[in-house]
Length: 209
Image 1 (cartoon, one colour):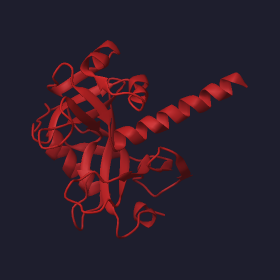
Image 2: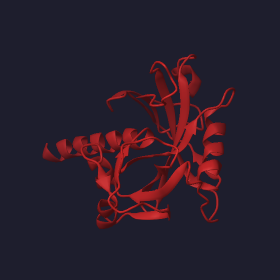
Image 3: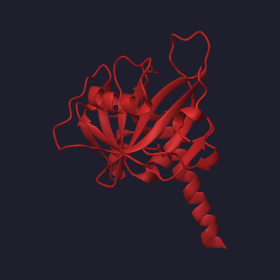
Image 4: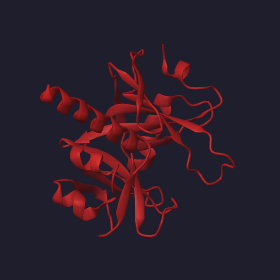
């Protein structure tokens, strides 16, 4: 079984990368071209929309170079969770390599679509292929942030700010983020937060038994 067999043919498709930076989770922060409320930005996994005729892996590698200036290597995941828009996991399966960590169905937020269609994101574990400097396009990506697991999970309940990132041991890895800007998770970031929160809740239950 492969990814394409799980995603409807007529759906919109995208990719996102789950990358660790010094033990923290690395995300991109939306750039100038993305419309959000004043004083707010979203953060998401490095990645984006699959172009016509483009596969998930190809799209993930292209988007990584476009958004960060760096190549990535995809890491096969032994398990793939199928995640619904509310964060619930409906199935866990094994896919042929290289398999994503999750396939997430989310609402497509793009303004130019007359109707909101299901948007499936294949979220892959990955790491950067080298130590070359990041090169960000401010129109696309204003910053790269690294945040700890606990703060990522908290972002599902409240918007976080730069002060939250720094005080929790996170950092702005590249680019810049204005003090007082509030951030909310989207796409891969939201799906990963739901998975991590769910895993912690299950672990807490096991500890109580």
